[in-house]
Length: 324
Image (cartoon, rainbow, N blue to C red; front, side, top):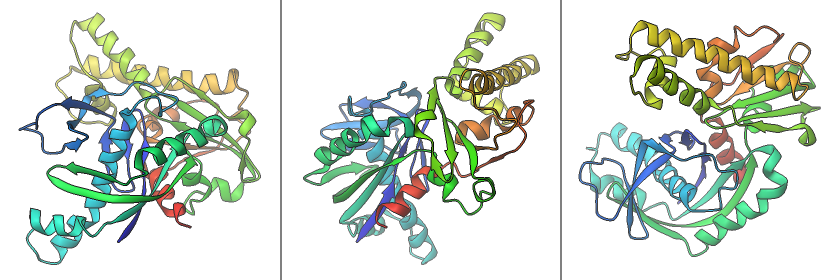
């Protein structure tokens, strides 16, 4: 059986079509006893971790950090529909049943992504990197299940583009010939001007004001003002409206910083890069855009915008188009 799989290696989370995993891990030389999900590959164990997320890497072929995260995403995506099938069929969900289904996957096609501005310089290098790693097939274990398959096709797609221009639920691309895509991620903000359905590659740009920069400033501010140590996930929980043990003053301070950070992002786009939102419709994409949506909507100067709510959109479209 063949599977088409898309993997979007972000700087906060790694997504496949149907799964999301923190973009970081801890490495062990012996099997971790308390970890439910772990990868065993080339003699080492890797456990996804929210506290050890990777730092920004423009060229993700410089080391194997992103390869490990890609393998975890592939394993989780292969398993995802199988769990549903086994459960809906009335069979008990147990290891033999799932392993038998995993064994049926003998080949995959893999779609990955790069920012539009990096395609010219890094597309071939990225494709060749994955082809070299997977030229003899790949074998590993994930959470005790064994995976072994060939990788028949590898293709690099532009990030943030297909989930907008190929999305029937996105109205701005259907109604306007000129607009901008703003993809707010963990470490970067990627801006893609689109004219006549095609990206204006020469005017695409990235900025290092992703949501993790906001998290870092909030952590430092809480430490300085309240002598309290918090982590990125606590800030993330506050901005998602989840309960935390922070005081109301701390929560309000984080929300104020979120508005300040959002304003900085959008001001930079307009003042330094001449993307005028007052006369350019904007489509916001990415988990960071959804996280900051309440603050984006308060920003003065955007005449028309909409949000793509599918945070797995990149991976979903990579998988859809790789074999087409």
